[in-house]
Structure formats: C-alpha cells, structure tokens
Length: 314
Image 1 (spheres, helix red, strand yellow):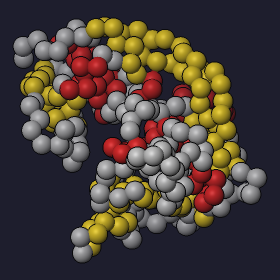
Image 2: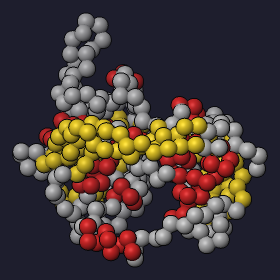
Image 3: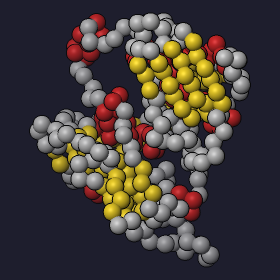
C-alpha cells in the first residue's frame, strides 16, 4: 500500500510515462463478491478463521537504503510459512497498512516521513499462527519495536456510487467456468508492451494513453479498484451480478478533475484536444457505467499519532 499522490499533481508529470507497464494483481479481498447477509452470518461462525492474539517469537528488523526504484522492488513479495516470515524492502507506511488491514489509502493517516523509511524483516511466527494472524503480529511488532501509537476516527468523506448509465451496460460476461489465467498481464514484444493473451487484469501506459484490462471482475471489485485510483470511497450500486471482462482506453493522470475537463496547452492557455477520454468519461462511453457523487460517506480512519523512525535493537 502506498500513500496516494496528491490530487493536484501536474498534468505534465502524470503523462510522463513512456511505455511503462504496471501489473495490478488485485488482492483477494478486492475481488471477493459480497455475500448476502444470511450467508455472512453463517460464514462468521464457521468459514472465517478465528483471529488470535499472536506475537512473533523473535524478529530481526534491518533498515534498507534504496538506491534503485524509489519505492522498492515490486517483485519482492512477502514470504510466510509456519516457521518464517520475511519481507524485503517494505515501507513503514506499508507495514502499518498491513497491520490494520487497510484496503484503501484514504483509510490511513500517517506522518509524512513514514513514506521514506524501508526495512527488511525476518521473523519467526508464534507456534500455531497462520497467515491470517499476520496483521496482529505485525501490529504488535510495530508497537513493541517502533513505539507505534494510534487511534481510530470516523470521518465523513465525499465519494461516488458506481451506477449503470442511461445507455445500459456495455460489458462482456466472463466465460463459464472462468479460464485459468497464467503468467503476467503485460508482456513486451519487439520493444512494445501489450496485454498478454493468458494474463489476468492489468494496466498499461504508453505515452498519453492508458489501457485498463479487467478479467473475471465483479462490479464490487471494479468499484474497489476505482476507489484506489480516485482516492475516495466508491460503492457498487450497479446491481450487476457475476464476473465481467472489459478494457478501458483513456487519458491518465487527470482522474480527479470534472468530466470533460481539457487541460490547457503550454503558452497561450489554449485547450489541447485529448486523444482519449478521461477515466470517468471512458467508463460511461465504453462500459456504460457512471460515477454518481455521494456526500458524507462514513469512513473509519486509522490515525497514527506517533512512532519512532528507528526500531529498538534486534
């Protein structure tokens, strides 16, 4: 989880990506379809794992000086098994997000310096602990080694409902059963990035154009992905069940501006026509979906009051 970029980032900087491929492998909690209330009650007593108050038996925390990619190597994924937990080049902001199971950046408020602190962690989980117990173990680790202090706040935020446009949805139902997706979503052929045939969901940027592909995505998942991109709450109100495949083509970088906004050209303030629509216009024109503004959405926010930059000794 990364701190979201400010909404007033310059248009020029946002469009500076040239043939940059970003693979978005959505986490299972973003893809899961909501269950009816009766099923949720039943699951709460049977299917869902019981969360226990575990701590790591021992943990080594080493600071990392990043010399390459500013935000660490995205290929380094956390490793967990009953005898070892390892996370390389993980940001302190990310660790806090994992500890509190934060789904979207706007649900977490931290001191700005946390964005720049990175560590490699090797730890031995408590006997009997599973991967589902990682958040509480990481939270205790932050409290014990970084003196983390926090509190919860309920805040009101403006957001959106994802609804079907007047034209009706323009979506393709995913195959039944869903095909096995293998390999990366993006591949490079002859120096040109493109979506791979058998890959999953992903995003691809080339110059001033972005492509967003969804494979076997529910509308709840799309709403959650939009919340990440727009940095505000987005709730699914389409009433569309099942999974869908789709591809959006749009101009990236100005998602937070009003629909139809055309950024001024350099020099005399004239408008430069966009080759592709902005994200919200693309949703309506290409998928038959709209974002309807909603006021006063109640959001639980975790606020970090204080923490030490340097952890206590191993």
